[in-house]
Amino acid sequence: MVAVSSVNTTKGEKDIGLFIEDYLRAIPYFNEHPNQVIVQTLKNDKLERRNVFALLLGQKDKNSQTIIFHGHTDTVGVEDYGALSGYAFDCDGLAEQLKQIELSEEVKKDLESGEYLFGRGACDMKSGDAVFMILLKELSEHVDNLSGNILLSLNPVEENLHTGIIEGIEVIENLKKNMT
Image 1 (cartoon, helix red, strand yellow):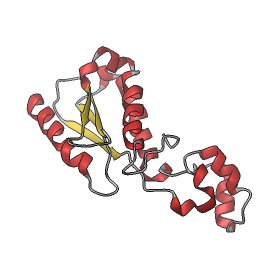
Image 2 (cartoon, one colour):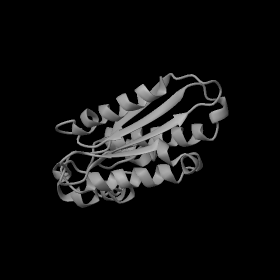
Image 3 (tube, rainbow, N blue to C red):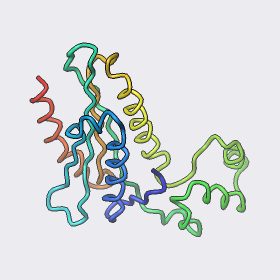
């Protein structure tokens, strides 16, 4: 996900929504329940940014309680990367470039450990989004044992106006009304 440049106010915010939608639609559960992947294009948005929702319905008992996995998909710009800005969305390339420059011992140790992912959005918030997506995929393979539901809500335009989640509330309220 880091490889998808989704800087706020750029076409990349649409691209990350398309990437997420494709990932979700490739999950067998959502192939069988395509109407449970909901894409909401933001109103009057020239960039055609979109909220992407996915609703996983547990089958263990008909429990209408729902946990929401919520995250945002946009990032801030890469100006602060300076000469390395061309690598901001390339985790491996950035790690290699960082090895070529002088770093504090603490950062150098983290880099050499191989336990960290470097790149714009890796910590805010694409790693969290990826965890939600993988959890949803895993849980979708065990809906017979799932009591309650999970709603994934991934939204653009968080880094400035929060337009994604503000407009997304409409989808969440409609789902809630139809589930109770």
